[in-house]
Image (cartoon, rainbow, N blue to C red; front, side):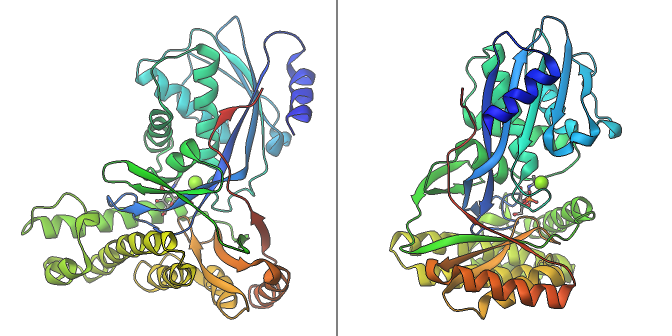
Length: 389
Ligand code: NG1
Ligand code: MG
C-alpha cells in the first residue's frame, strides 16, 4: 500500500527530498451510540483498515492534495493563505480544516506541503473515514513541522474542532478519540464527560467482528444528526430547571424515570431516554466483557439497536433489515447499527465457523428486501494514527 502510494506521490510531485508515510485507522463503535455528545460512555476500537498518506514539505506556501479514492478529481491546489471552507474543494475540506485548527490554536506551519492519500475504509460506510483523514492530517502536521507539546488526545480534539467549526458537523469526540488512541486488540472505554479512558482487551474466543455496510447513501445524516443533538439539549435544559446536572450522561435509569416528566416535548423525552439508557448499557457491557460474559455483551448490543430504532429513530429500513436478519443467524452473539445511523453500517459479533453462512444468509435477505447488495468486512482491531516510514 505505502509503496504504491509513494510511487503515485513521485509521479505527481517528483522524486527526492524527505518523503514520509503515515497511517490513520478507521473505527467501529461496539456500543454507546449517540452518547458522546451527551457526556456519556462509548466503547469504540480502531481498525487495521484506514487511510494511508504520503507527504513532503515544500519551500513555498503552496499545499497540494490528491486522493487515489477520488482520482477523477485530480490534484487540489491551495495555500496556507487560503484556509477557508470551499464547497468545490470537496474532501480536501477535512484536511484543510485541520490545518486551519492548528493555526487557530497557535501551531502555524511555516511552509506548505504536498500530499497524497489512499483509504481502504469503505467510503460513507460509517467507519469514520472523515475522522481518519483528520487524524492523518494532524499526525502529518506534527511530524513535518516538529510541533511540540501536543498529545494524541490534543490531536483528537483538534480533529473534532475542525469537523465542528470548519465542516459544520456538530459531532462528539468518539471517532477522533478512538482513531488517535487506538490499540491493537483493545477497545477504548471512554467517558466523554471528562475524557477518562481505559483500554479493554477484546478476546472473544473464536468470535470476530463483522461489519455490514448497507450501501445506502446518507445525504441527510448531517442535518438529522444536528437535529438529534438539539433534541437532547432541549431535554437537558428542561431537566436543568429542576435538577443540577451538566449532561444526560450523569443520570441513572432510576433517576431518569424520576425526572422525565420535566421534559415537555415527548419526542425529546424519547431521545433523552435513549441517551441515558444507552450510557448505562455501555457501562454494563464493558463490565460483562471484563467478566468474560460475551453473551450479556451481545444482548446489550441488541438492546442498543432496539433503542436506536424505537426511541432515537435513527436506523431505517436498511439497517433494521441487516440487524434483524443477523439476529436470526446461528453463531451471532450480538448485532446492532453503529455510527450515526440512517444508513452506514452494522456491527455484529459472530462465531468464526459461522461467518461464511452469516455473510451468505444476511446478504441474500438484504438484497431481496432492499434491492441492492450489502458489503461485508471481517475486521481486526489495530493501533491509532502514526507515522510508518
Ligand atoms: P459516524 O457517523 O459513524 O462518523 C457520528 C459522530 C460520532 C457519534 C456517532 C453516534 C461524526 C464524525 N461522528 O459517527 O461522534 O456521535 O455519530 O454515536 O460525525
Ligand atoms: Mg463521519
